[in-house]
Image (tube, rainbow, N blue to C red; front, side, top):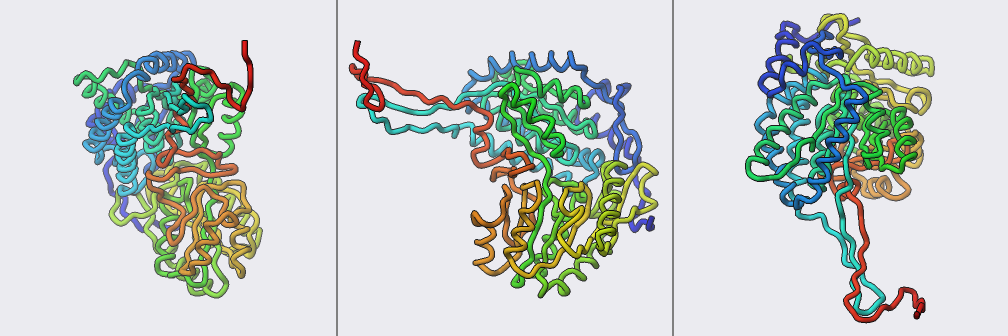
Length: 517
């Protein structure tokens, strides 16, 4: 271990958590005396004991949501949007407290915790406008006296399974859209971060109360929260009353969820692994690239699905960039996120630390030069896992670089030809996010073309991390193919009907078919 560079004389994490939960309106009965301990990665201490749902209780909650859907689907979409507008207002009022709770439970630095809540507010704003834009098409028909169109209808109960690293934002991406589309929502958060979910649920209930006080007509059971572990998630995935499930997590989780949904012909919105890469071309603005790489690779302690994990640097600029990057890695402040100046907080738990160390061991065996990666002593307790981000210079694109390790490891490889760098970008199972740093228009356009990056997100002169809600978020291949948030992602939460209306006295058949009786 190396000594800490951050102060440790900070308030008790448990005391802060309890005060925040009280202010956010979460009843103490929800987080005291339960059978699921909740620990803060900041200190490793247990800060709450929440109550878990049983499998029968999960079924009951889904039943209540389904009953609510049968009423909610008939509320006009702009009126449904009014509820989401009020949800955005309540989130604005609670932003500081909910953002702080994200820091304490997920380990994010304060600006990232607040940024996550801002993302929730932003998707609410987007969904309010969307509630008046659930457009279908009018389609040309070959039959005279006929009109053909498509209409979009609510789908049913939307299940949401979220991960610890974005404990509340992912729910909002799904819930805000699902609600304006006319669906009920059942949420199973990560068992590692249930407190932020309880707080978000309390905030949403306040918005519902305001909505119904003004004659909104939101039925009981519209929003359900399921606290539990794998059995609860499986019950949600397997229930035939849930026609669409958004699941965020590892590719391993997706391999388990997808077949179960397919077996009952339910829709899957999968947001899975991301072994994301960036290319630094000879013409790149190295100052800009350095900043973009640092945030994308070290932000959230390397625990974003869009974290930069592989970096391909052109041989002609390798020696001008990589030593500078190593210096940044050596000097970045790692510590309790509540301490001033901290940019890298803790890993979520000991399992994440062990996975990181195993990957670094494999890299060394493959001939890598490893900068950093060690555990930092003196922050939190024995069960708090703070590490120096690791910069790993690999002689070839091989070994652990070919798979995602959910930790702050950046593998760096030299390249000579852009074709090789693009091929390496695409040579892994995941296909979430990617970027290129270049001032050469031809290189940028090549990277974005059909023969360029095969990822769902491809950027130029920014890193692969930090997406805005206005675009559809998601990736290809082992990332799962799902899309959430902006663009036309709303269509995943609705069913499409094609309608033909005959307003004539004749009955012509399509394709010239004759059937006279």
